Length: 205
Image (tube, rainbow, N blue to C red; front, side):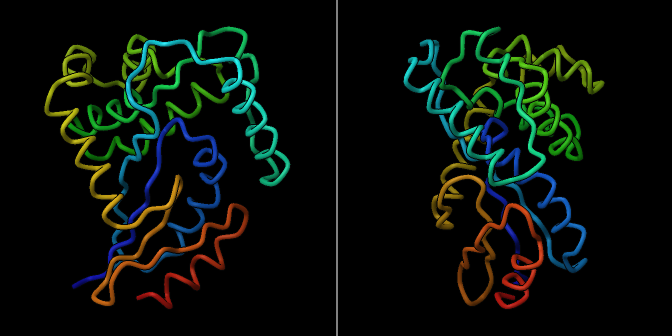
């Protein structure tokens, strides 16, 4: 069995946003023969219910904590004033799937565009209209994207991603897991330095 590195994430996970620069550095340093397979986390299911004030405050405090421990991470706090937030990340996850159905190479581009819309532009990725606008900006076929976004097959693929990362033993988002003949190995996340993760990956393979 060839080892595979699984990256479990959610486009609306703030810790995943903070991890992005170090993940990019890690990917650049990985052996060419080690495939990296992203899995969508499905942090919060579909909901039309406005986020309770307690949850809003909790997430804003999480953003502040991230900025304290991961230098250089940017957040636009206007999001909390300009939107009616909902605890719903499944639409953003499905948007990544819908984009890759048009072009497999678009997975990371869609993820990054959602992150930028959410964290820098104060746009709510829980809203389908905003996801369609992101798809248009990326040059995707928006009619097809709109159809695929909530198609049964897209729902099923997201649920398959969730089932798979749970079976692998993911512990929150982000998670890195090496699957090899020796079993599944959880790689400790380092948000500011790729080197310790690279060492752990080499040891696991």
